[in-house]
Picture 1 (cartoon, rainbow, N blue to C red):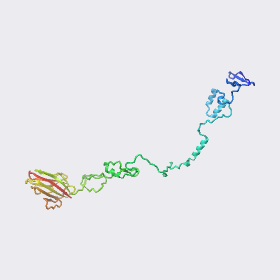
Picture 2: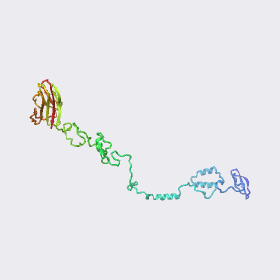
Picture 3: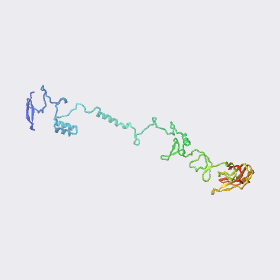
Picture 4: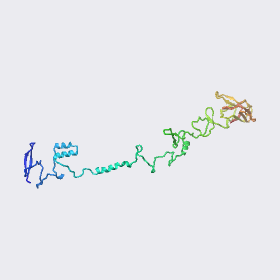
Length: 347
């Protein structure tokens, strides 16, 4: 096909070039080569690599930038490029693994039946039933009061009582608690610490185990005693009157006093008396009258008790005994006597 060029004036007063064919018709080339060296037409529908490049005006680019949907963009492209009909896509623009209608249908089917695969809620919670299998339970450490098998060490109750410090239970002693919110207490606090009985004990504040047989003396509790023996005056040589220390009578009703003279001057003599102590003034009062003075060696016995009737005693004094008393030995002169005084309190 023979073509020629023709220069013309555009509406905006610029010049352009037209290709004119045999029929005299032509198009504005815009500086684009329309034919190759062999005369083949280069314009028309081709692959992207062989397509004719198109330059958009600034106004067209602004119009495309204002579009918000693909349909509007395509419509704008069609209006700009003069393309009519549909725009085809050679391959899917979705990435591999993207959701498709078929994939969504499978997921929806599974979700629609999920209610039949879970148990009904109990008070808004999923119930858990472990009755069909053995449930393992693990702990980091067992209390000291339990064995490895989880059994209570009963012996630890005794261990806490016997080996613990008073007022502080051993670590292995378990505690017992009543109703929820009650006050916990150690099971060994109601039992006293094992200890030897002694006189001068205060009133107990915890239960006492066993029959202690205590009696009240007006100030404290003390053990009830049987017959009590003791030394009032130790053996020694003396030349002057002597008083023993105070002697406490727990519950004796009778008193035997033994004066044992091992050396005697033979003059003056020794006179023995039992003196009761006044708890108010602290003064002493003789319970027996002055007996016969002892001037020779030998053992003398004095009986001071209710209903005293001993025929062999140096003196019988029928009187009750006080709580506190002492033994007085009076010397008749300053000569030396060696002697001792012992006593026996009888219930």
